[in-house]
Image 1 (cartoon, rainbow, N blue to C red):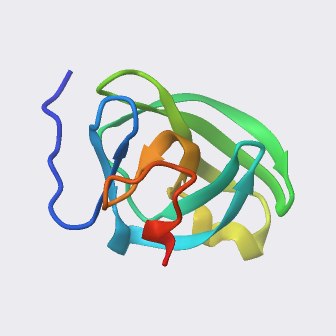
Image 2: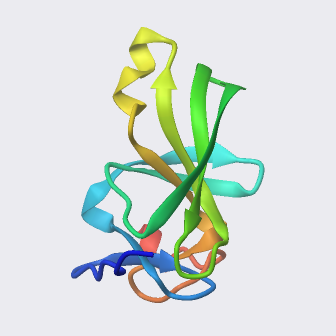
Length: 118
């Protein structure tokens, strides 16, 4: 396993082991919803491993996606869009979604506190 990247700034981290995952400045959208609640689309995410690619039909069309896992503790934190089959959704390719329930916000809050959503 390679070395873990430490981010500086407003950091989102794995709620289980505190491994840094992403910066708030890399958020593209906070309007994603999953079966587990809110999720954020990030331009880039660090310290993750990528699972098996699979085809998935979502509300906005068909995608090739892969689950992403925290390298610190191995827990699933979200998914990455590998390919978008709809032209209008191509901007999501290579971007990652982190589920809010799996991550801690920049102020250390866990899901359920909207302090970092203000």
